[in-house]
Length: 245
Image (cartoon, rainbow, N blue to C red; front, side):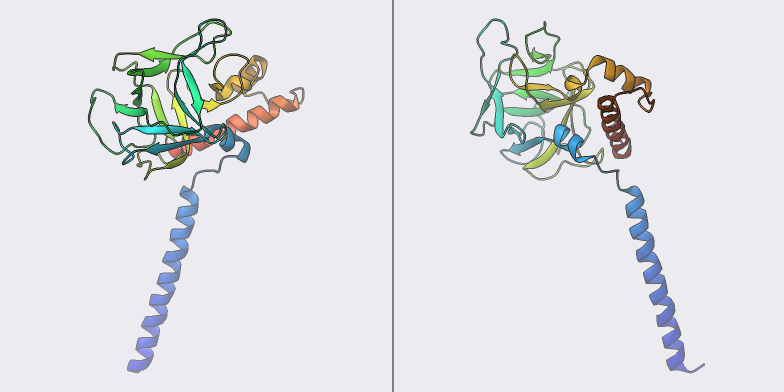
């Protein structure tokens, strides 16, 4: 075999190997890609923008902007009485009064990771926002706590692969998950209190029972129940693919 032919043969083999490797990488990337959330589910859950005053790290103030409400959530006293609920209000201007705090490491700064358990601190009221059961007509089940402990650390930022940093500010399409309620914190109309709710709030108890039992495929189930089942199934598959605990 001539030297020229040998070179052409080697080049051909190398070219084939490069193409095969590239195809394999694309296939592997596609296989690892999480299932996309249906647009309706993504719009309902991934609706926050976190605008940090510096790096997207713990102990760095940020404003909490609702892409749904198109305003910023901040601490503001509400009148006492029926429908008052937790003291939160909306503002068109950014208010950097929120901080994520590491459990057991108050005051330390480090990059925030997706699905990392954190406490959510408000610099105005100087307390942590936590799940708190409220009476009917008192708004979303949230309250305040002065302590930083395991029970206070009940928030997770979701939307990206678990363990990866949430990226530079602003962090758009963020999902805020509460580990006590086991649900996503979202903007939504309420008959009383500030317009905040849990993602499952709009799903009737009967439909939710069907979702949990996994019997939505039955022919007797309403179209509303089937739609809810499909949405929650898609969300569950997304969470699993992202490695959320």
